[in-house]
Length: 64
Image (cartoon, rainbow, N blue to C red; front, side, top):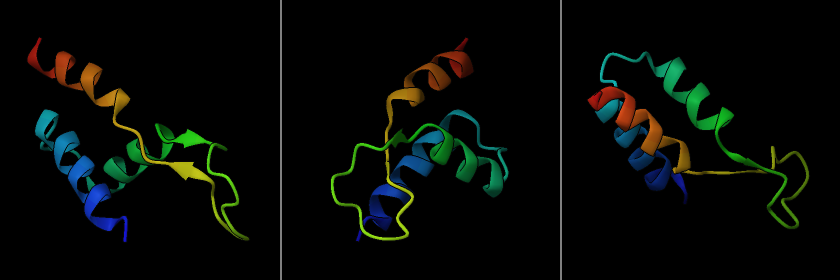
């Protein structure tokens, strides 16, 4: 049930750079996720927690 949150962060990301390819958006969200902070993530989980901290810099860079 986290897909609405992920979609929302993707929209915020695209707000700063609307020409990004879907693969680039996915990579940005994955690369900037917090790693190994989920307790008991379950077998096969990538143990990543969605983060929006990187978006502030991206938006500042976009706005110049």
